[in-house]
Amino acid sequence: MKAISQNEFGDIDVLEEVEIPVPKPGREEVLVEIHAIGFNPVDVKMRIGLYPQSFPMTLGVDFSGIVVGKGDMVRDFEVGDRVFGLVTAQASNGSYAQFTCVPQQMIAKIPKSLTFEAAAVVPVAYLTAYEAMIGHGVFEENRPLFIAGGSGGVGSAAIALAGAYRLGPIFTLAGSSESVNYLESKFGIPEKQIVRYQGISIEETSEQLVQKNGGDRFYMTLDFVGRKSKELCFDIVAPRGHVITILPEEEHFPIPVWGRGDGPIWRKSLSLHMVFLFAASLSKNQKDWMFYKSVLTHLSMLLETDQIPAPIFKNVGEFSVETARKAHLQLEEGHTKGKLVMSVAHSRGE
Image (cartoon, rainbow, N blue to C red; front, top):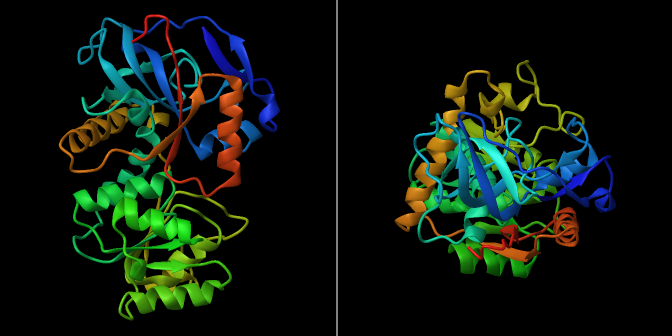
């Protein structure tokens, strides 16, 4: 089968198309013929070496496709099922490939209303947003919350889930009129709940957000961007509030977990939630892996019943190393609206 792999860390030129054997499923695994591949910022981080990996390495986490084989312990999926899911360390190879074998706990059936391309951009973004907003059980209905990175992949998923769980109103940031229009037209967030951050300081951004929220700080702030946005989340959160972040960055912004003085957690008696989507997959107890299947199945129901809108994405092309490099460049440039996806054609034409 064809795969997009690399033998060293580096820029987009390290990506190359290779031939590798089609994997065989274990007893509790399914073999998926991949029809669409979602791109994520973590792909770029893995390519350049921010996560330890062994070579050769096939990148990719998000995928959708058709079950074409399964182990004898698989009960909930049949050959021919349309499924979507994510690749973890337990998979045979990354999703930048024509096939992959994954544990049955990492997939769910695609809602009938979604194409392969739409389904392929759901897993990482929506699972991350779900764990950040819902999974810790700290959310409350009808309370204002702030999302840093509202127009990105995880941010877009979070806004969609907020509607289903009656969270909000939502306040966020925009770097341009285009971003403001995107947030208004796609998600119905009015301009009065958006602060344009270009050319103003963190302090000014904070003041404007609190002012737009009627002078109140926020019960919940979600950091999907990192760096300065993380500082902003700590600044505008209310006492006894919650800060949720998906980005560790000790060098830029060390967070004092405990300590007297001016530390933000001590001073405001905050709850800090650090979300790492792949944590459950690292457990030796396979029961922990069920988090992925359970939430993906729930998301599938929400999508099928129109409780959350179909994901926003851009198809950057057919399966090829050139398409993968193009997607990585767009991710590196930033300011991508929604998600990016790559289609995979198969000779059977399905």
